[in-house]
Image 1 (tube, one colour):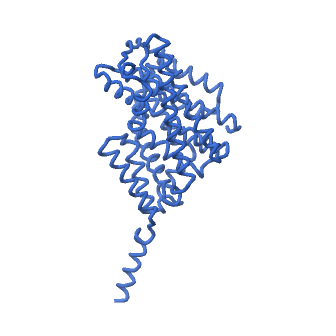
Image 2 (cartoon, helix red, strand yellow; image 1 turned 180 degrees about the vertical axis):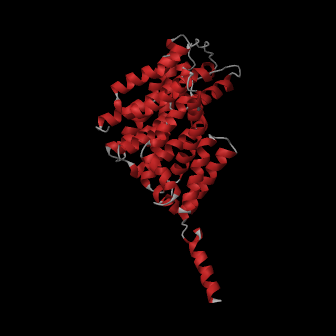
Image 3 (cartoon, one colour; image 1 turned 45 degrees about the vertical axis):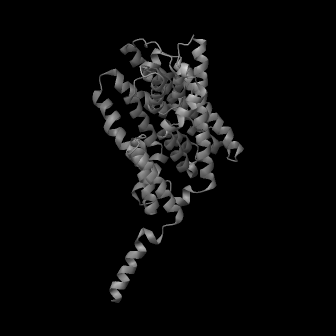
Length: 375
């Protein structure tokens, strides 16, 4: 009987119930809510499912993120900026840059949406973060998870990398909830009904030259952006050159999904109750939300200005797609426009600012790195 009692006692002490705190329970509930949003509501399940499941795992079994645990090694690839750069390659291989090439004015809208980044930067300084911490936090305003991770690691801010990554990816996933109220507040129904002219056809030569030229120009001015911009443009060159179809298919499918699984679960696993439930994390999450809202608003406002400057040829809704959440933000512009007029088709027009936002966020990250002397 003593042997049986000792065995049962050992099993009980090894169960998660013996070490689980109220904070762990709270984070498990949050993980389940995220899973509900992803599976039932369809809010970017490719991101939210692995993130929320990583959150679930680490709050049941914390050792999974300790040295020797599976997700610890996944997270090392985040810290070394390998996974973010591979994500950019996959995004480039999946994305048609034609709308941006056909309408270069999209760069203005992509730049306008970066306003949220600088809002977050000065807000973080005001809340007591140092300059490098503020810079790392600020990229959340661009709704760009890979760039947020890349900059945080390059600036040596691994202590707050988890909250930054979770905030950035969470807001990317929740774009369909966060953006529409802001877009509707800043535009009239008449403006939302504006139909834009069909984009001009873009030649294959233009599409092949674009990633090469952008890489040369941006990397020459800001060499620190080369890992992100270079991988984004390399992936797009795979897509457009037409001679490496196997590489394009691998980068946009198998590799992309493998990297998303590893990055998503490891980012979610940074949300243990001990690491996540604190004042610093709350500040980062709130700053990220404010910054994302300001970025969306700035894009919509500049879109409105361009609308009237061009004689109402531009629907201001496409300005909000200037944040880096590709292609989610462009889809939201399409959805809000279609609600005003079901015959309105804005998706391809919104993809221009959306792609410009990806480039813009990477440039801002490179600028921060150059300012702080980080190579």
